[in-house]
Image 1: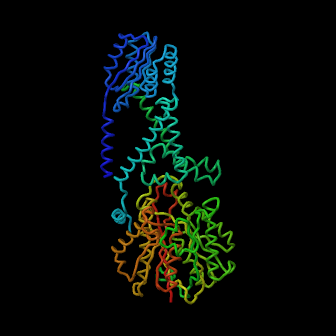
Image 2: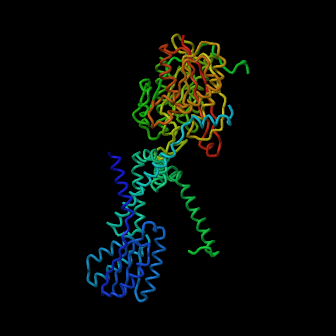
Image 3: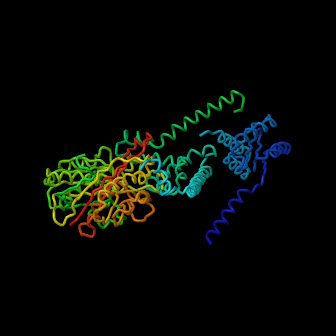
Length: 135
Length: 151
Length: 335
């Protein structure tokens, strides 16, 4: 009886790891639809990302992506590649692309709070500093 | 009785290590240690201001701390008897090697006993780890200079 | 050689007048625990270090053996003993406390019998009246020296053995009625079958045991049969190999009622002890405890003790050397 339960749990765990719903979310402080569209095109081309969240504010752009489990070995390469692509498209913005899970969580919290401009600026700065930490 | 004719008798009679069972046990226990480490990583990222990159430091420290408690209470060797490589390979195994040697040599004092003998077992890990890192970096530098691969 | 044969015969019947056995807390799990005189609660005998504890229980056991013989320490002419620790320091420190003239002996785990053989020669020569002999081992001290720190999580293989914390000592005097006496002995030769695994002592020691047993039994082919031939610490693996060697060579057809191994039986069938017990204290505590008791009560009348030892050091093994072994045999009778 218990062996069967273990088999069921094992299969459920395996299957849950296989689910794949790529989602791209955006938050624009000034609601510039054109910028969002440009970014969306770049992100959709990238097949190895499973989720992404981008925040536009003033001339800052922070993109948090999550890489597919199988491509985790190329995580930093994908991050650098996306960084280059996005910087090319948005030469007037201060761009940060991060594949770090913490950055994704922080951005999600930020968007949920729906802050005013001052708070948004401060939080974005904090997030950028956090992403640059080495130790 | 000469050595050549004796060895086949030993091979026939001495019990063999159960390799397949050991492999599964090592996989299972090693996996659990890694899963626990991953949970600690997530906890550090969720409750504190660590990123994925920086969370590895407190995670390793926590895992070694746990290894220290298990070693001190005499539980790590029981896990090791079951798991073999599954408990020896992760960083907890490194911790266990250092801590068990430190406990053992306390009777010879802090400097000549604990200090010089602490890395009796783990010393080769450090020496050959550093050396192989050097060799790999050297090979990569040469290959990059030759233009075979890029950084 | 003075004698034609390799076997030594003792015509004056040097008698083992008393024995004493001490063991550590884990040895309570032994099938022989009821025969042990002292069982300690603490592996270190409440001392600071394992080695100090080792010296302490050697001293305690020797004192008890002397008292059981109805003698004083000053009556003992010489203490013959040794252990597995470097330079035999626990025995040396115990000898310091006992203040008996002392001669250290080293035969690894075969010291229990090598000390008895030497004692018998001394009593036979009539230069001595009473000799204290025996050997001991302490698990933590031996593991730390030969293998890994106690708390290290290395996996023990199924042919591995557990070093016991035990001591077995006896007093040998001139012939005494109703006491087991030493009839004959065979001193072992170093046998090396090129085994290299320090975790598999049983396989390394079996050829040495076989050589000594074959030599001794061959001299006694036409005599009355032995009630028991018991080896020291071959363990379940080594003992199975010994039986195979005896079968192949026909030695198992010699007149012996029963073959046993002290190491294989020491902890019974508990699987955490793998192939069984080992250590200088294993053969000493079993030979001079339960088996001596059976001979004293005349359940057994003719017994051959064969203690086996592996003559390696941690350094020799690291330098890639093989493991040479030795086995000493002593024949005990009671009239």
